[in-house]
Length: 155
Image (tube, rainbow, N blue to C red; front, top):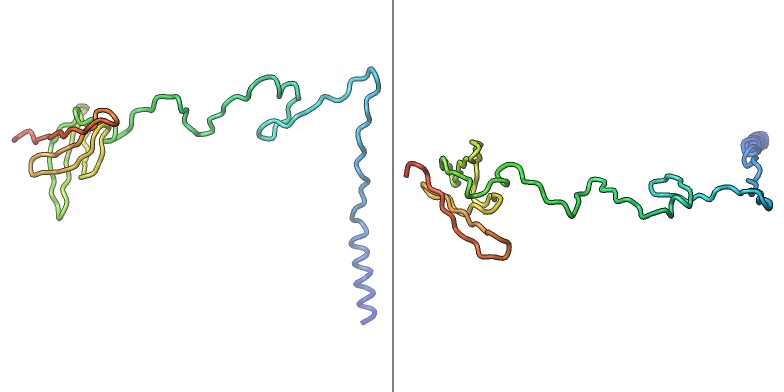
C-alpha cells in the first residue's frame, strides 16, 4: 500500500512539474524621444485589425447581410400573388366533395388553380359560384373594397 501511494505521488509530481514553465510576457519598451512608436491599432468589425487613423476616417459602410434595402421598391411577386384581378380570366370551375376550385388564366396564358381565400396582387377570392367567382379588390390601402365578378366565357 505504501509503495503504490509513493509511486502515485511520484507520478503526480512528475506529471505537473512541466506545467507553467513559460516566463511572463514582457511589456513593450517605450520609444525614446525622436523614435516613432508602434502604430496604434483598433479592432474593426468582424475581427479585422485596422489602424486607428483608418478606423476614424469615415462612417462605416452599411452591409445588408441578407436583409432587404428598406428604400428599394419591392419586386413583383411570383405566381398567382403577382396577378391582378383585371388581368385574370376565369376558364373553369372544378367542384369536389365539399370544396370548389377556380381555374384562372392570365393574359400570358399561364393558368392557376385558386380556392376560396386565395389572394392575388390586388384582391382576394371570396366566393366560387356555379359559373362565376367573386373577388374583393382594394384599390388603395385604407379605401373601401369593391366586388368584382368573373364569369365563365360560355355563360
